[in-house]
Length: 251
Image 1 (tube, rainbow, N blue to C red):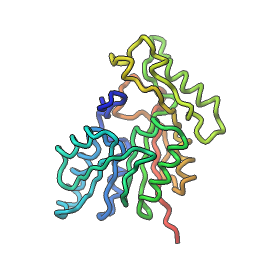
Image 2: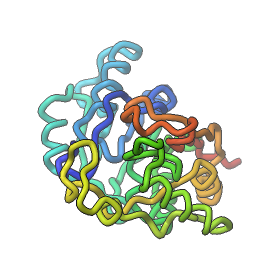
Image 3: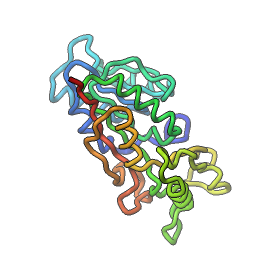
Image 4: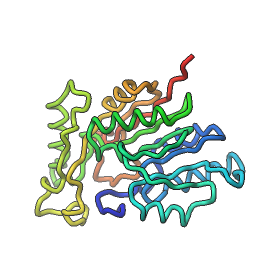
């Protein structure tokens, strides 16, 4: 669980981990927005040490960003010297940084559509020309607590919300209140008050359009299960929106 008990750090690295790390230009850091307990950050530092050799004494090759100081403190205590930490809360307190590549994994579904647009505008400004943005988020088709029939009350509401608002930039921005839907019940043996009160179901097409509005070129757009999610979330391979976009180099 994350420190606020409203989310989970994944059991694996991001499904876009390779795209994120391979975009390192040797100068500007990889940035992880919403690093939690640092899984992607630690693994990225290991890969860079293996493929790029030891960093210069003062080099920052990976920047771990989060809005919870407990996460940042843990990351500082366990990370190698080329990892830096910074407080960040999207969209209003992103780090002041120039980045090779930015990973925003399992974060954007906690904020409304206008805030995602503002976050993507920041990412476009922060990236070097040709820099890469990697995004993952939960879709309207992700299951959270399927019953014996395979139906999930949270997923059913999320899909209905998203379908009812087709044509909008962010069809799911009204959000789904998990605590309200699961009142009197528990999810994966977690107390109900540990469930989010707002979750924004986001399709890959929603993220892709938003990236293009922000000035990015979309390189990859797909929906599939996140390998770190619980198996119960599976639903026809459309559970997790994954987008890779590149800051266009202007002549």
